[in-house]
Image 1 (cartoon, one colour):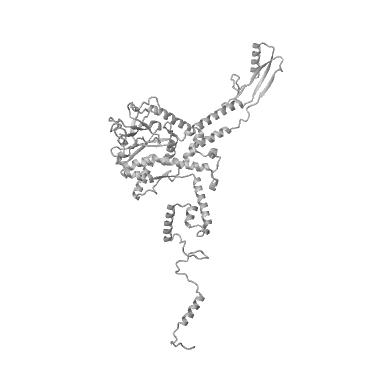
Image 2 (cartoon, helix red, strand yellow):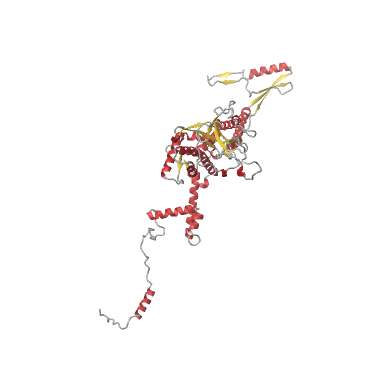
Length: 556
């Protein structure tokens, strides 16, 4: 194997020998798997690979030039990438990342640096469009090999038809088994092959001179030096990576054929034509034909308007394909006669075109209400929002998630090269790094708002019955749909806000008239019980000592 071009980031922890598997890596990423050369192996035939993918990608790009397909593609891209004069289309979301503020600041700075290399704020639409149409996207990460700690110096776009991701088994000279067959039943004694992953760049891919990797037709490049992102759609039978336009190929071809056939039909059936029956008597056949031609040249007057000069010319030498019919009629007929053939009827029917146009939009997951602006934008209740718009919003969210793999790859390389984190740290942190795209589709937001209002209304209606038929916990869990984490978090926040005086204490006494809190008034003052007071006074009188001389009335 020749030395690969580019750089590699080695993992500090090698794979444990106890974690091997006889199954090669899956092909969900559209990567081809080749065995090492030999009797049962195969070489990497770049020409054959590109012959398929080159034609496939070219078909996708030709489809994008069709006006109807381009309109649907633009709807998808405009929802996924929202351009704003002030805000960037995507930002780094680190709210769920358990790291110090210094690490988070470095992550945000490096991500902004990557966006500047891509010029993403200005070229986000074009970058996302290339990925959406081709179904794959490649960038060459150029670094200074003498000073790799400076990070990525340039990100250079690579045409998809010139790059291929290869997964190949390394060739070994020793035996494939450590122990002869039959001497052990331990599957760990099998010498599992090592897998090597790399890219092949061929600037002449798709042409007859493409050649193969074994013949030196391409440049082998390391995996870490290429940023790679696919659509996630893979043909299970052939293993090729597909574009999101794959489902629309048949619909678009049908729409094209229907439109072409409609144009041909209307051109041939639209005009009215006349039939001239010319009486030739009992003339011989040759003379009858000569007489018919004389009559045609005499009465046929084709006036042509020249738009360039403004003149009207008589061009009898030109023969149109929709000419009138001239037929001879023998003696005994009805003489010379002119009959008019009506033009085609119902030429304005385009129901079939509308059907295939809707089918095209459905195949691209775009709501059919967006065709020709038929559907208006409704900011009313969520029940008035079309279900197709909600499905479309979820589809755009999945596209963003998949496209974020490109940022993940570039950010990982940048952080590792600059020694900000280790590969082990990245495996832990990458799960909590999210990418916040600007959002312009308000349909899902309106749905959430409407549902929240309905839940609050249900909780308000159940408030008189809290403590009698339902508990407070039941209302929060079943009506407000709060999870255990949300309940604990909200209780903690409410205690803090009550302590800080942000919100009043709901358990504190309030003025029944004004509703204002009364504050800490100590123990409540109860009205005296007159009956109990009289009984106590009587008992005290009975227990008095008779030896005590009490003063007479009026004495002090």
